[in-house]
Image (cartoon, one colour):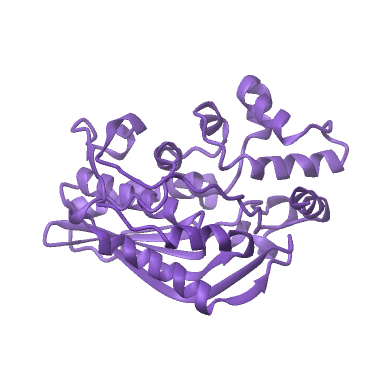
Amino acid sequence: MENQERQYLDLMQEILDKGIKQEDKGTGDITYSIFGRQIRFDLSKGFPLLTTKKVFWKGVLHELYWFMSGQSNIKYLVDNGVHIWDDYPYRIYREKIKKGEAPEITKEEFVEKIKTDSAFAKEHGELKYIYGEMWRRWPAQNGRTVDQLQWIVDDLRKDPDAHNALVNSWNPEYLYEMALPEESCRFPICHNMYQANVKNGKLSLQLFQRSADIFLGVPFNIASYALLTHILAKVTGNEPGEFVHTFGDVHVYEKHIDVAKEQLTRTPKPLPTIKIDPSVREIDDFRPEHVTLANYESHPPIKAELALVGGIVDEDWKKFVQKKKV
């Protein structure tokens, strides 16, 4: 069980030892990065919720449900005390301020209005072309949508030997300079593609993550996609196999180096286990309360600031982010 977490720690150590210094052109944030790595978790040997620091399990549950249910408005997350997505619709709101289309308010005031004002949340809490929409409502020709997640479930039920059970969140039509300016997604799609595969009655899932924040984001991503693996195995009548995490650019932010080193001094503890309620027979049955986490013992949390990088960044947002660093 310890060895499964050790590979994550070894990868973080490799980045600290060998990472190449790079700078984000939008915000000026410095990273040290390497390219093309992979770690694997045998889910029969414990659930990979890292123990060398406490992981925000409530956030994992609610965010994954938010994705799986096809939602793209942050109000659900805000209402459930999960604030990891607050900055991205606020970025869009600041663009409206700059154009004179919205009054100046702080991020804290923005989040409070998302929580308390449904009309405001409907107008300003939406993030188009992100994971939930791409998974469950991919915008296709003639105005129709494609439910990729339900499709792979149906396909694996019919054909467990299928090699095409793949969900993609990377739609060039809405990303970066490939998009029309008014249609560009303001959130940088990072964990952009995953594939499920069945061998000997065990369902495994491989995630390709094009850009990965090893200290802050990756522990969250591991837990989220390992849980998705469990859910997909359950609804397709299989046992969970492996979660395979494949990275493109994997990096540590310069401002996280000291806390990463602190985490590396800690000894991993035995991994916890999870149980999914038997009532979950379809992906749309799943709710956060249907998962029971048992025997999770971890070292204390280590707090660090989220880097607000990626996507199309205008000068106003760049100045806003840089002002927060002062």
